[in-house]
Image (cartoon, one colour):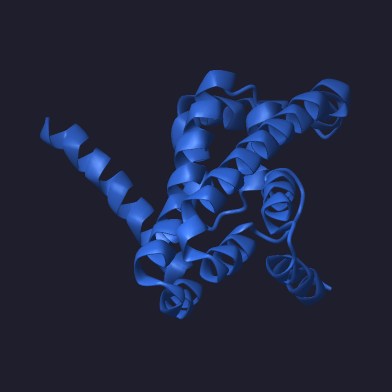
Length: 193
């Protein structure tokens, strides 16, 4: 079923409404849809490399607005039934602990999820559920998602369609390595200063 969804998403690259489909896909993926927008972003940018940055902007905006929807889903879920479920299973202490971790590392958690292959939707929903500061959530989401999509768009803009195989093969590994190096750099600065 996921393969059929994947093929359906790619099919939008051949249609005139591809940019709108990219916006909708990025919006839905940030809160519930399983296929990441990178797939359609790459296909559209390869088809029209000079429009790569337009597609990056469309994808980033859709993802950010979808992330806000995911945040609202988590926030409403906890208010309606989440707290009762946690109390019923006697998990209040654990939920409070996770909530405090999430609040202490809010920008980091959202940024890492927004940039790496981690399922961003889980973090958008969790951010709402655990009451992460909303402006911090929006800023971290905007920066990390835009950076992720801008890297893809830039590679295709500068190197053309030939870079697609490289991106398909190594993007998750490179994104994870970049994030680990970034975190290690901040940890090293903390101990050096």
